[in-house]
Amino acid sequence: MWRPLQLPNHLGVRGASSRASSMWDLRQEIGMRWVVTSDQAKYMRERQVQNRDKSVAAEDWAERHLKQTGYKWTRQAQWGCRLFDFWCADLGIAIEIDGPDHDEKYDRARDQYNYFRSGIVVLRVKNFDETDLNQVLEQVKTADTWTIRKQKMRTQYGLSESENFSTILKKVGIQKAHGKWNPKPI
Image (cartoon, rainbow, N blue to C red; front, side):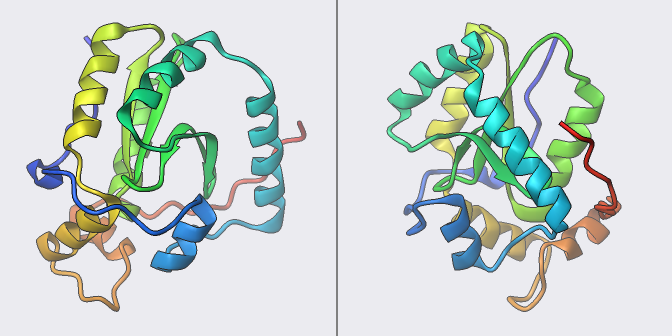
Protein backbone atom coordinates (compact mmCIF):
# COMPACT_ATOMS: atom_id res chain seq x y z
CA MET A 1 0.00 0.00 0.00
CA TRP A 2 1.19 3.51 -0.81
CA ARG A 3 2.24 5.66 2.14
CA PRO A 4 3.00 9.39 2.28
CA LEU A 5 6.59 10.46 2.90
CA GLN A 6 7.47 9.89 6.55
CA LEU A 7 8.94 13.09 7.93
CA PRO A 8 10.41 13.89 11.35
CA ASN A 9 7.87 14.48 14.12
CA HIS A 10 8.79 18.15 14.47
CA LEU A 11 6.34 19.33 11.77
CA GLY A 12 3.97 20.13 14.66
CA VAL A 13 1.33 22.78 15.05
CA ARG A 14 0.47 25.50 12.56
CA GLY A 15 2.22 28.83 13.16
CA ALA A 16 2.15 32.32 11.68
CA SER A 17 1.77 32.72 7.94
CA SER A 18 4.44 33.96 5.54
CA ARG A 19 4.29 37.49 4.12
CA ALA A 20 5.02 36.22 0.63
CA SER A 21 2.17 36.20 -1.87
CA SER A 22 3.85 34.19 -4.61
CA MET A 23 6.59 31.64 -5.12
CA TRP A 24 8.88 34.40 -6.46
CA ASP A 25 8.20 36.69 -3.46
CA LEU A 26 8.89 33.78 -1.14
CA ARG A 27 12.21 33.01 -2.81
CA GLN A 28 13.22 36.65 -2.49
CA GLU A 29 12.07 36.90 1.13
CA ILE A 30 13.94 33.84 2.30
CA GLY A 31 16.92 34.15 -0.03
CA MET A 32 16.47 30.62 -1.28
CA ARG A 33 16.54 29.57 -4.89
CA TRP A 34 17.52 26.62 -6.96
CA VAL A 35 19.90 27.50 -9.70
CA VAL A 36 18.78 26.54 -13.18
CA THR A 37 20.19 27.59 -16.51
CA SER A 38 18.20 29.91 -18.75
CA ASP A 39 17.45 26.97 -21.08
CA GLN A 40 16.21 24.88 -18.16
CA ALA A 41 14.08 27.75 -16.86
CA LYS A 42 12.55 28.33 -20.30
CA TYR A 43 11.80 24.62 -20.67
CA MET A 44 10.20 24.47 -17.23
CA ARG A 45 8.03 27.54 -17.96
CA GLU A 46 6.85 25.90 -21.21
CA ARG A 47 6.01 22.69 -19.34
CA GLN A 48 4.23 24.72 -16.69
CA VAL A 49 2.04 26.44 -19.32
CA GLN A 50 1.30 23.11 -21.02
CA ASN A 51 0.30 21.50 -17.73
CA ARG A 52 -1.89 24.44 -16.73
CA ASP A 53 -3.64 24.37 -20.10
CA LYS A 54 -4.68 20.73 -19.86
CA SER A 55 -7.46 19.80 -17.51
CA VAL A 56 -6.80 16.74 -15.38
CA ALA A 57 -9.92 15.38 -13.68
CA ALA A 58 -8.02 14.07 -10.63
CA GLU A 59 -6.38 17.48 -10.09
CA ASP A 60 -9.75 19.24 -10.43
CA TRP A 61 -11.13 16.81 -7.82
CA ALA A 62 -8.24 17.50 -5.43
CA GLU A 63 -8.44 21.26 -5.95
CA ARG A 64 -12.06 21.32 -4.76
CA HIS A 65 -10.95 19.68 -1.50
CA LEU A 66 -7.84 21.86 -1.08
CA LYS A 67 -9.93 25.04 -1.30
CA GLN A 68 -11.57 23.98 1.96
CA THR A 69 -8.25 24.21 3.85
CA GLY A 70 -8.32 28.01 3.89
CA TYR A 71 -4.87 28.23 2.27
CA LYS A 72 -3.95 29.53 -1.17
CA TRP A 73 -2.92 26.67 -3.48
CA THR A 74 -1.20 27.35 -6.80
CA ARG A 75 -1.54 24.77 -9.55
CA GLN A 76 1.52 23.67 -11.53
CA ALA A 77 3.96 25.74 -9.49
CA GLN A 78 7.61 25.66 -10.54
CA TRP A 79 10.41 25.19 -8.03
CA GLY A 80 13.78 24.86 -9.70
CA CYS A 81 13.53 21.90 -12.04
CA ARG A 82 10.27 20.61 -10.56
CA LEU A 83 6.64 21.32 -11.21
CA PHE A 84 4.27 20.63 -8.35
CA ASP A 85 0.60 19.89 -9.01
CA PHE A 86 -0.33 22.11 -6.04
CA TRP A 87 1.83 24.45 -3.96
CA CYS A 88 1.08 26.37 -0.76
CA ALA A 89 3.71 29.07 -0.13
CA ASP A 90 2.58 29.71 3.46
CA LEU A 91 3.16 26.09 4.44
CA GLY A 92 5.96 25.16 2.05
CA ILE A 93 3.89 22.13 1.11
CA ALA A 94 3.50 20.67 -2.35
CA ILE A 95 0.82 18.13 -3.15
CA GLU A 96 1.25 15.73 -6.03
CA ILE A 97 -1.69 13.85 -7.53
CA ASP A 98 -0.22 10.58 -8.77
CA GLY A 99 -1.57 8.53 -11.62
CA PRO A 100 -0.64 4.90 -12.22
CA ASP A 101 2.57 5.75 -14.10
CA HIS A 102 4.47 7.20 -11.13
CA ASP A 103 7.64 5.51 -9.93
CA GLU A 104 7.23 5.50 -6.14
CA LYS A 105 10.91 4.88 -5.38
CA TYR A 106 12.05 7.72 -7.67
CA ASP A 107 9.35 10.07 -6.35
CA ARG A 108 10.24 9.26 -2.73
CA ALA A 109 13.92 10.06 -3.41
CA ARG A 110 13.06 13.41 -5.07
CA ASP A 111 10.63 14.32 -2.29
CA GLN A 112 13.19 13.50 0.39
CA TYR A 113 15.80 15.57 -1.48
CA ASN A 114 13.38 18.54 -1.63
CA TYR A 115 12.70 18.26 2.09
CA PHE A 116 16.33 18.24 3.17
CA ARG A 117 17.38 20.80 0.53
CA SER A 118 14.72 23.39 1.31
CA GLY A 119 12.23 22.24 3.93
CA ILE A 120 9.57 21.64 1.27
CA VAL A 121 7.18 18.86 2.24
CA VAL A 122 5.78 16.93 -0.72
CA LEU A 123 2.61 15.00 0.03
CA ARG A 124 1.24 12.48 -2.46
CA VAL A 125 -2.31 11.43 -3.26
CA LYS A 126 -3.23 8.68 -5.70
CA ASN A 127 -5.85 9.69 -8.27
CA PHE A 128 -9.31 9.91 -6.67
CA ASP A 129 -8.16 8.11 -3.49
CA GLU A 130 -10.32 9.61 -0.72
CA THR A 131 -8.29 7.92 2.03
CA ASP A 132 -4.99 9.36 0.74
CA LEU A 133 -6.54 12.79 0.34
CA ASN A 134 -8.04 12.79 3.85
CA GLN A 135 -4.63 11.83 5.32
CA VAL A 136 -2.98 14.65 3.39
CA LEU A 137 -5.63 17.16 4.48
CA GLU A 138 -5.00 16.16 8.12
CA GLN A 139 -1.25 16.72 7.63
CA VAL A 140 -1.97 20.14 6.12
CA LYS A 141 -4.15 21.08 9.13
CA THR A 142 -1.37 20.31 11.61
CA ALA A 143 1.68 21.45 9.61
CA ASP A 144 3.95 24.26 10.73
CA THR A 145 4.48 27.14 8.37
CA TRP A 146 7.49 26.83 6.10
CA THR A 147 9.34 29.49 8.10
CA ILE A 148 8.85 27.66 11.39
CA ARG A 149 9.73 24.29 9.84
CA LYS A 150 13.00 25.68 8.46
CA GLN A 151 13.90 27.20 11.84
CA LYS A 152 13.29 23.83 13.50
CA MET A 153 15.41 22.12 10.85
CA ARG A 154 18.22 24.64 11.39
CA THR A 155 18.18 23.81 15.10
CA GLN A 156 17.86 20.06 14.58
CA TYR A 157 20.78 19.93 12.12
CA GLY A 158 22.91 22.59 13.82
CA LEU A 159 22.90 25.13 10.96
CA SER A 160 23.95 28.69 11.55
CA GLU A 161 21.99 31.46 9.84
CA SER A 162 24.82 31.83 7.30
CA GLU A 163 24.72 28.15 6.26
CA ASN A 164 22.34 27.08 3.54
CA PHE A 165 20.21 23.96 3.54
CA SER A 166 22.62 22.15 1.20
CA THR A 167 24.60 21.47 4.37
CA ILE A 168 21.77 19.26 5.64
CA LEU A 169 22.08 17.09 2.52
CA LYS A 170 25.68 16.34 3.51
CA LYS A 171 24.72 15.65 7.11
CA VAL A 172 22.02 13.13 6.15
CA GLY A 173 24.11 11.57 3.37
CA ILE A 174 22.15 12.66 0.30
CA GLN A 175 24.13 13.73 -2.76
CA LYS A 176 23.45 17.19 -4.05
CA ALA A 177 21.65 17.16 -7.40
CA HIS A 178 24.00 18.09 -10.22
CA GLY A 179 21.46 20.11 -12.24
CA LYS A 180 23.30 19.31 -15.47
CA TRP A 181 20.35 18.06 -17.49
CA ASN A 182 19.50 19.36 -20.93
CA PRO A 183 15.90 20.24 -21.67
CA LYS A 184 14.18 18.16 -24.35
CA PRO A 185 12.27 19.94 -27.12
CA ILE A 186 8.57 20.15 -26.36
